[in-house]
Image (tube, rainbow, N blue to C red):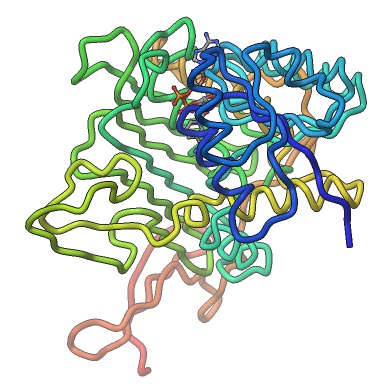
Length: 400
Ligand SMILES: NC(=O)c1ccc[n+]([C@@H]2O[C@H](COP(=O)([O-])OP(=O)(O)OC[C@H]3O[C@@H](n4cnc5c(N)ncnc54)[C@H](O)[C@@H]3O)[C@@H](O)[C@H]2O)c1
């Protein structure tokens, strides 16, 4: 049996709570041994609630605690770098929530720090680890949908729950950095991490909230092989948390609905309290989520992180992935401003230098290229054909 780990949890907000709930759930053996938050009363109450033996208001003391071998960062975005640097210097394994940095430059400094120190690093992008995504990613790897052409990832809710998210300086942006980071990595995972993301085109606007941060955005990210990652994010969506992914391939399609319409529907006249994260209402027809820690990917994510640590391999998501995501988002912000396609600047690219354009095998009919075959409502089969020499497109019926 592999060893168990002793974790320092940095942050006692929403994600610190979800991570601790996951780590201490279902008889798992890795435990939070130390928790840090800047508020003394809050950190003590959190430690008591989750059975954590030690707590502190000193971040360095939490990280450097002799018993701790893994640091989990669940702090606001502007504090990730400081926490990573201290953890790397202390020689501790470090797992950081999303987004890794506020910019690619910040993320690169974090990547360099952990690599220089030679410590284990994991990027906690939970939404590629939920059971539906893991199964879909495996199906794509197994060739079930052919070559991936287009991935559409959507995350939309009514806006974040804490003031710092709305502060551009602390968060590094609005809905793009907060939600687009998930979507960008989901698209990248399906298209293939070896394929270079080349350029991005993005629209962003502040449509609803009285803040400087963008609360809506749509982006297209073009990959070297011609595949497109499309993300849609909103902090103004009404009706709960809309988390959906669509993957289109040359041989098939995958649709995933993570949160609303999961097959679990409940009606309540009076309301029964908490339903699921960012649910807009607590009565009427509701769409609860069976086990949020699992359906949001936290369970499989921590399993992969600790298994990887114990077997000296990389986890599925590393700081390098977090850095690539930040580079994609930097280009999206640049494009939203310039209203042009903007190049994705990757000073450190570790994938393929070039991936040939997706080109599925073509079929022929009587010496012509077969463009399309379709059975029409009258039962007849029509072929659309292109002459190889002239490029002329014609149609004909066949018996079939
Ligand atoms: N699905 C996900 O992976 C997911 C979901 C939510 C949040 N997050 C990420 O987790 C991080 C924290 O988000 P959250 O939702 O838990 O936020 P939160 O506001 O709920 O909690 C933030 C925590 O940091 C502490 N904090 C705030 N400002 C601080 C400061 N200046 N110095 C020290 N501590 C400070 C707060 O007291 C609290 O403990 C962010 O990077 C966010 O993007 C990830």
